[in-house]
Image (cartoon, rainbow, N blue to C red; front, side, top):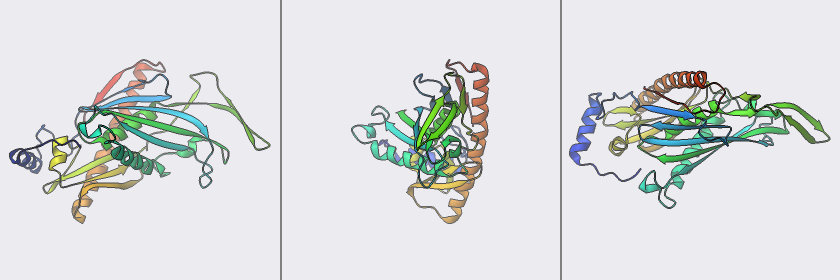
Length: 292
């Protein structure tokens, strides 16, 4: 994160606020900052969203392409993630400064979505061993105000919910060649089931307590941070960003992340369905927001 000097008095104020469960912006240790999303923001993509978590601003676009399944997973499709950090988001991102962070976030998302319990890749298979859909998920970070892992995972889930894949009318295998027929109707498409798609939750240890959704100032005061991937049936410790955790503290952090992720998942899906109900199948934009 960008260098943001804090005086010792400011660090002490943040530390005492976390200890008293009253953070410097009025939140408890379990609260997220306000979130807002807008879908269908990229007309050339099959699914897209613009997601804001406080001042963090992220755009996600998804495009499906026909590919060949992996030999060790012949009945599954593919999903890949590409993250681009705008130089305007943080001073640290100027030049090639954001490449390492972008690679780390991409790897965390790939690991979280690779489990069968997290995301149904079989739904992307067209003809086992021969043809499948590959989803290219492009992520652009426009602005950062801390907690990028979480915000990006929320944005990806919104974009996947919004994604429409052309329906395959017929798939024929003739002498090793695959002949596909796709529907010409833009509204005749398949949707993805994202009910169990994973969310990433970052927990920071500040003093003796752990918090979710750390601000940039709280990240500076943190003595340890971990990223946990949570879906309905699977919990994965994806990355230790900094510091170390006592076993008991680690267990408390995981419990905090799981409980928070399940609540966010419920509210996020509810907001996505409500937005879709309002705008229907059109490509009009509509902003939705919710609090945790």
